[in-house]
Figure 1 (tube, helix red, strand yellow):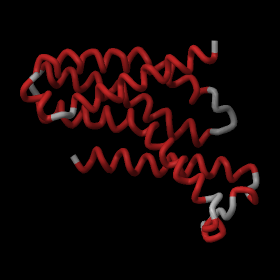
Figure 2 (cartoon, helix red, strand yellow):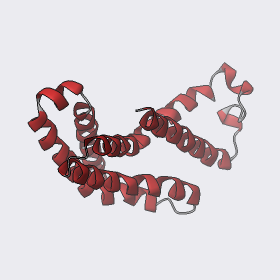
Figure 3 (cartoon, helix red, strand yellow):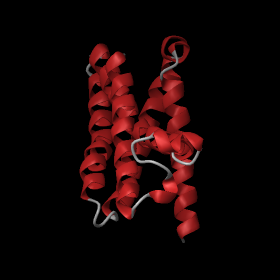
Length: 168
């Protein structure tokens, strides 16, 4: 049961990641507009269908209110910007559509960026330079330091993902 859920999560995430990257290719938007439209609709529908399942692990973080406060708005913004972007495209508001879909992708990629930030923090706190970091070596951490690292990864991911969205 658990393995099937993880496989489904990874398959959906892989599809959405690839589809979003394809959607932002200029050649697809300009030369294959029908592919762009169809893939865009499928991407938004898959994201809408997957949102409740993706929100369940966040709901399961009992005793971690910062995680819930930080991640619930992001997971709820995915369907908001997806639906908004589709409606804007339908109404020929192309600049607004583009902005909404950039935010849609930014909210989706927040979670992947968070994992990358966590991966970068591991070696930072286990190598010879760990004594020079604010938290020090991983072996000396108290239990609350794990929560701090997770919260720092959320903050870093938020800055990277929203910064990329704001840049465009």
